[in-house]
Length: 536
Ligand code: G4P
Image 1 (cartoon, rainbow, N blue to C red):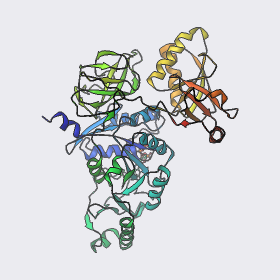
Image 2 (cartoon, helix red, strand yellow):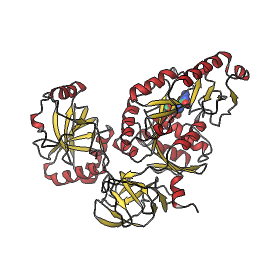
Image 3 (spheres, protein in one colour):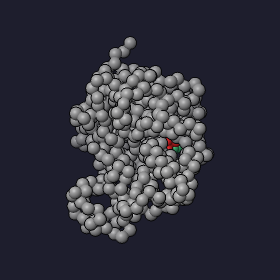
Image 4 (tube, rainbow, N blue to C red):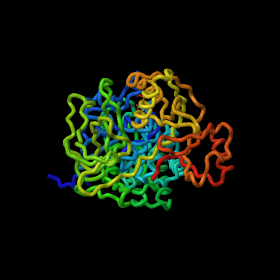
């Protein structure tokens, strides 16, 4: 039996971040294929159908019949126990997507080689930088015409502000895609597939050294010449591979490939597992010290709460990132925010019939706990005598705003309760305009679908009907100055900028456009603003 520290050292917990359609689902599927978690790959369909709003992973689950909770996918490969955290992308993009990144020890950034760095990738990347986790880049769709790889590197560096270190280098793209050069082994791994979208098997790889005349035949004379020049340029550039910079999120190792045709996925996975860190320590805010993941006592924090899909039951599932020790089903732990001891029951109600309940799990893993309504996002659980408390999860900037007003004023109590509980789950954020009451509330959401979910749930679970009118704000900023230091009413702002408070009493400003935000910054030199709320 592996020891506790061996179990934990073998964990790799990461999230895949990308703009919709860059290939996150396809890459995930191919990782499962390589690791033997599934036997055959096929396109994960469902985008154009009504299933669109459901996590892509549920589609994988339905089609493949493999065990995927709605939050994490676990498999073992070469002695590593790998957890991939789901970061919903399309219409179900929400604050949960951001929060999940708080539970990851590394991120894989998938970039469409033709499109480069896109909007959603930028947002997700910024969240990763809050924790300085390592970020690995997979430039995808090389079987299609892509942009010049040097341009792509430059764009990543300039737009995201992270250094790049190509681990592999592409040979052509589109019809002319011939493979990648592995800079570490100095071998060419040739692309043998026919490039057709439906290639479902592993693609053969042929290794040959740069300069080998064989390569002229294999990848073409001109490609060979270009590759020699490119590699000379890369080797000449003076950014060394620096593991420390990778581990602290200052340098991203870059891989090229084509998830669809399975090319470049295996070298990527191998290097990723070699370079990605085992579970990282989280800081205990009580002592200010990092908590060793391998210490005996279990501890963790809630990063996501999901309502039960069965509407007859109010209970929810709280997803906990284990930060130290070992979790055992039914164990007792201290719920720090509730200030009491509770029994930890794994949530089985959402699981498919064939899915086993989690009996034990280790630091780095995610467990879904049954939640009768006692947990909030960010709560800490810990066993043993030494109590710890993990930092609050930041609140992330919503991009869509609406005013929600209750239609039947007699149901005020239910309305307030519903809004509070739903915001506690973290699907929406509620704001109060300074100087107004609770009859009408400003609601902010990261994904627009959340508004519909809110309306439906208020009606079905709390029997409250509301009306919704969209608000024109697009940018939100938390005020960092303390109330003693700065009175919000005295700020010099454009007339259409709105002053609000969040439910924790944090003070914020809502802006219609970048122009209004710039105005606020220029005209209030002492004002300090943040894109994230609740950062400790
Ligand atoms: P996402 O999860 O990041 O949103 O992307 P997803 O994997 O669903 O891929 C988006 C589309 O891009 C899919 O096509 C997928 O087949 C395609 N794709 C992914 N990787 C590659 C690649 O390496 N090369 C090429 N050429 N295409 C790739 P779709 O038309 O939306 O779906 P489908 O009808 O093909 O399933």
